[in-house]
Length: 169
Image 1: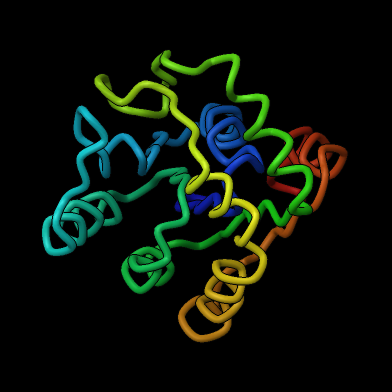
Image 2: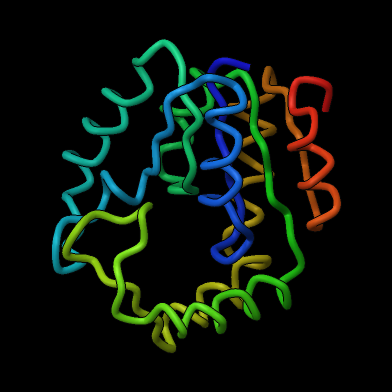
């Protein structure tokens, strides 16, 4: 594993897994949210975002967390492995609800000036993920990522087992 994508619903634990996996594999960690957002939660233009992602995936090795399915066409061809946190909707929603305790603080996977925030729109996004975003993952893996080693993890036990021996998973 030299170029690993960590994907899944918000609240599934992508950033946490990536943060643990990267040093185990001796690879640089790339949190896409740190590159996507600017202070004040400002989004880049689509053109600028694609340029950023092209630059990031050109690196020889990485563990990269984040969905951003509009860039699957750039990331999946360069990756060799996808770790897909395919958690149940209820788990992800519950974890996002728990984020409230960190409300207003900066997370290490977000840039400065983007304090933790949760609103109804975000909860709806997480709730709708299985119906709206999950099919994009399935389609991307089928059409762009058929060469990839896909490690689909659906619960905490599976993640813990994977982290005990990611090269064997």
